[in-house]
Structures are given as structure tokens and as C-alpha cells.
Length: 146
Image 1: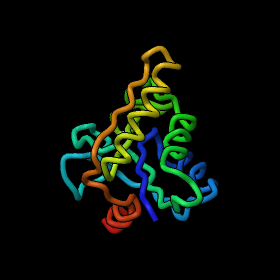
Image 2 (image 1 turned 90 degrees about the vertical axis):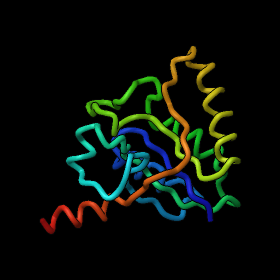
Image 3 (image 1 turned 180 degrees about the horizontal axis):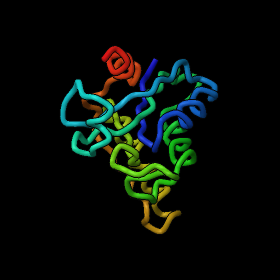
Image 4 (image 1 turned 30 degrees about the vertical axis):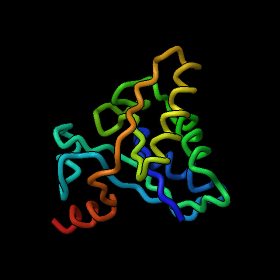
């Protein structure tokens, strides 16, 4: 199994879409890329933690490639809008690919460059190493206990 982590706006819709792809074993929603953890959702919403809403995907690379998931990432959202998707605005709704190894980074860069050519250089998607990921349900459970 391998892991892919993508930020493409509010995580609920993309999570459902990724979960329907053959070869995807498990999906979960979370937050990634911020300064530190743990944090609260309210802190994420301030834009000061630098966390993004993400979908974490466990997949079988014998059934679905990382490259095809990155291509779906670009199909599932508008990579030309900075810090927003649809009605959602803020840095937590940015477009970003979090890679776990150098192979993923190279694949993400290749796909991004191809998409960027098709979209006349308007892609704002970032590519970053995975850091400070935590599951949304961990946060929501703590939030509900308060």
C-alpha cells in the first residue's frame, strides 16, 4: 500500500470521489502542512496555522498509479483559484499536493507542468513534502469533548 495526500478545497466532496476509484483502499479527511500540531479547527480557520484541508488516500499501486491519482486531483477541483474552491475561501482551501517521497514529487511535478501548459500557466497548486498531518476525526472528537 502507498499513501497520497491532496489539498483541493473542502475535503468532503473530494474524499467521496477518491473513495470510488478502483485500487483506493481507504480514504480519510484531515489537515496538513501547518506550523505545528495539535491545533483546533478554529485555529485552522484563522489562516495563521497554514494547515490545509486534505484527503489522505491509501491505495494499491498495482491497481491504480500515483500518477493517475494526481491526474484525478486536477480533475476534481479548479487548480487556478488561489486559496479557494467554490464558496469556500481561506488558506485551508488551497490547492496543494503533499508528497511522501522523491518519486511522488517527480510525478506530481510532471503532471502539474502538463496541466499548467493546458491552462496557460494559471495553475497555483503547490507541491510540498508531507508534514504535520492529522486526521480530522481526531480534532472533531477533541472539539466535541470540550
